Length: 228
Image (tube, rainbow, N blue to C red):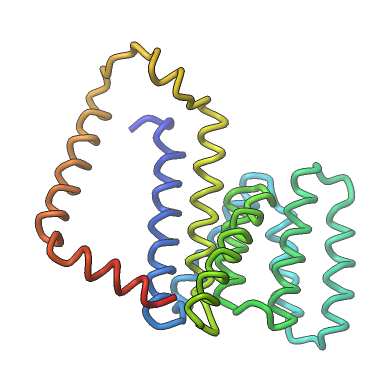
């Protein structure tokens, strides 16, 4: 398999992981630590190995001092972020700021521990603090929907997943220059055997899933809607 496939493999793993977390949150309003703690530490290690070591180091240090009283934690959090920002690229500074914001949301009891760990993974994997914007918008939309349905709580992990997917789609479209004009004028023909086999496999799996679950799709959609 070519190295060109690695980004797509990573994207697929992230999407599947977020789907599992969201499904758990919808089902029981909780996400097992096995779905959040190991991915967090794995992301920290991978980020550090690839040179983006500041955010993982900040996360590790904040985990170590998380038991401190709120005012001391906030002061130390800001100090550590400031020190790590010295000589850091602008993009990494924004990521450090996002890490601080996420931690403070937890420290002030505005976000659950599982939500925090998932968001930290997303920010470090994406390497861009702007992923928080679509997540926040998705959370606001779910909040409005929950208010209309007179719900006191909404599954925020679902908002994290939807916001992350929106960010990934937007980034991909910007990088690839996907436009209707390009699509209509594209005359390239498929010549890769690997791609053809992958497409065939996806179609077969989708058809099999529809055949097996076709009678349950409506029930599943209604069940998910009822969670809000």
